[in-house]
Length: 606
Image 1 (cartoon, rainbow, N blue to C red):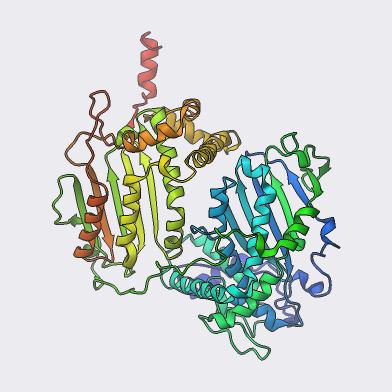
Image 2: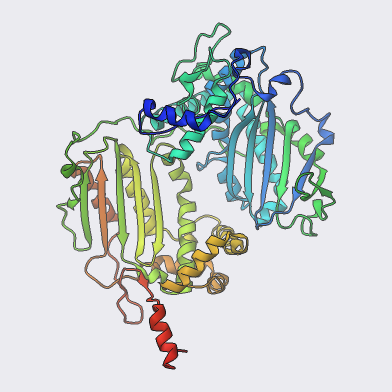
């Protein structure tokens, strides 16, 4: 079955004839019995798409070596979907999205999450979880953990924690909390739908075409009404009569579907894959050689028994989950409730394009600008700040230490920012040739608190003062080393961009210089840089520039700037070697070809 989605700002009456002329050669089948028929319709509900292994004693893991220096363990569950004889069950699963709730719980990054514990143990740098369905009779749940070198050695411990966490989600004692979390997912999806930002048009058209494939099945229960919102919103399940399907379901409606889906996630049904450069060598004893080859691309791999892991996880259940991990996170306090606009919208282009004005705020160190939104009509605010600290990138060592400081800062803020990010708040921090730059954005109700917390963290963060500082530093340093090593496997255009920047930007350092600086870096040096080197400035009177805009009034903008002033007081404006550092990127002048040829011809070239 073919689906076609067109996204255009022109009316359908003018677009349709053009599109039809492009596709008129495609044969049309007028047989109504073929409407909505998919290839898997012939075997769906008849053949098990992924037969279960006979017993846990036959469980094996697959290991292979990647081209890039990546280390991960992937746990995949291939799960049959309800058969054609149960259309209400199939439709309810699509509308209520229990798999999305479970994947959101697995992928949570709060302070007492599964990922936080893996990081505390030095086993992982990241964790991703997601559910997908390539065909109507089969869906997949994936948990992918990005491992550290130590995490690769202890990958069974990592997998065991994932199994224990899933077992904890099945406990009756957390059923109510899981339902409350599901209602949060519903509220956040409604919020994101209501205040969506414009995105990529081609991607949107592709998603609509995919939705048409998904929601054309059982058109009486799904159909065109869900082409636009079916993949974005949660809906109540339907019964055998087709009743239900309303927007904003509650936990009483969602809980049975979530419990049914999680019951399928057993260790016995899990496929385990390990990907690491050490696979196929003596460093990975379980698969020191790769005797097998994949059918399509002849990729070498190995398989080995994990019966002890599967049997152990099945027997232990949720008892293997440490107290430091909470099965269900606490309620998200950043979800906004006040979405009222603070100014009426204007209609003239002159008013819309008016530049930001100076905010009447007395400061000897900050230039402050403010513009209230009267154009877009969304309850969101934006704060952009640039601090003149170009000494932070003056040498290769300074660049590396700044990157390590930023990585540590982002890691520290991870659990706090995660809840805020789910609720539509975000931030960015970067250290550039112009100085330290950061921005905060999102729903304005909680924006002042969010900005204050981020600013305080930037001003006070010292990587040497956190828990397990040395182990955390080693993990973060390994991340940067891996990033540099990946250069050889990047695309040619990325290599071109690198060489171009070396030619025209100053200061700019080669990969070799950066690698040497990274090898020299240690936790003590990063700590010293966080307290002194990072803040070496321009020596001028103005230390930073701030722009506040969006759904904020003057009082709200002033309170945000005041919190910045208190959190980021002016530094001593130190200078390197007695030379004033200017907060700007310097560009090297490349000679024109005629001038270059003339210089060579006169003998003055080298």
